[in-house]
Length: 476
Image 1 (cartoon, rainbow, N blue to C red):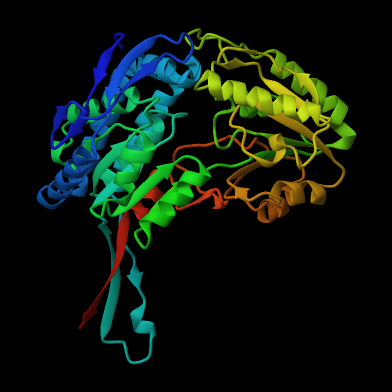
Image 2 (image 1 turned 180 degrees about the vertical axis):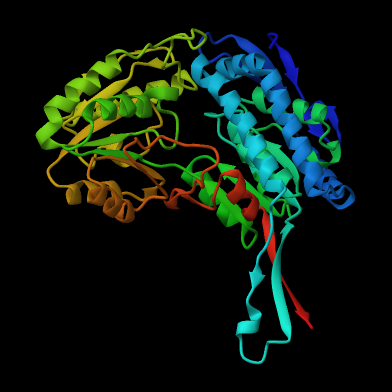
């Protein structure tokens, strides 16, 4: 991306300049300006939604054609893999190895959506089982909702967009999408590739702007039939309130936890927990923030874990060897550093890290924490992890469940009965047995409970959310 390259909106089937304020996009490691965005006006958001509505009503693609187009997008993503990965590295600070993997995952998300487009069906309803109904049959259809509005978070600027756009198109909808202002480039390039693949211009729109104006106007727009959002719980709750009876899918925050039992494979658990806590700078809603370790193996596990943390390469995200790069901004890194120091002032102890240089915060491990500390009861969204000893699994599960969030949890144990019983008792949407909390595969259903959100992601499941179920009866 050339420094200062202007980023446009795609509205009404054409690339146009925005009509609002100009915002610079910076390289998250160097701080250099790499692009500028002129935000959309509310009138342009209106035009985007109205254009998508017209496109939805005018362009009716057969499921096979939708699948063909989505597969073509996947091909183009992979054909542009290196350039896309470079864009992700620059605008988000995500290290090269994770950015490159994100590009591959985005292609897979489009392929999965293509598969599901060809087999999105209803079901036969056994109406003849009711008394006096033997002369009738019944079945359901899945019908597209219309215009899907979407907003994503900065921490996965390509694949997260794919998880909203590809299922929406695969289900037969039109889409109006707003990426974060701090990471607008990957989404813009993806829309260019969708057009190159042959996706009808009438079915897609891209608007840039801040959440309080452009995002809010899109949320409240009466022409948006379904809204999908990934971001913070406070914003998610405002979206839910603004949408009223209109359906939403909200993938919100968490204070994700992983439990390591005494009978676990401690070496594997240490490796996976270090990756889960610190890859992507801990800026994932499933990043392990609380690590519960059974007391009898605490000393052994802690030594293994700290060795894994020490082995992480920290710094320049363009270096293929880097594991942990800069956070999304120096302001966020300063905040996370302050939270860690606040915990220390309240009695916690730092086992590793705690040092910041600009937006790069060294992977930080805390111990001797208390439940009331901010690092334990609020989502830090940073490379900061706390180790908490426990005596009984019952005690650990209670602590995992003792928050308003419930997105994902991990549990390491060799006891299959213990594992399966715990999976039923952990009040989260996703439980990973013998893996850490941050372990997502794109085809799985991904959803939280409590304040971690409503609705389900994953192409198959998102496409059901993005369609209406219609019952049809036939009298014979």
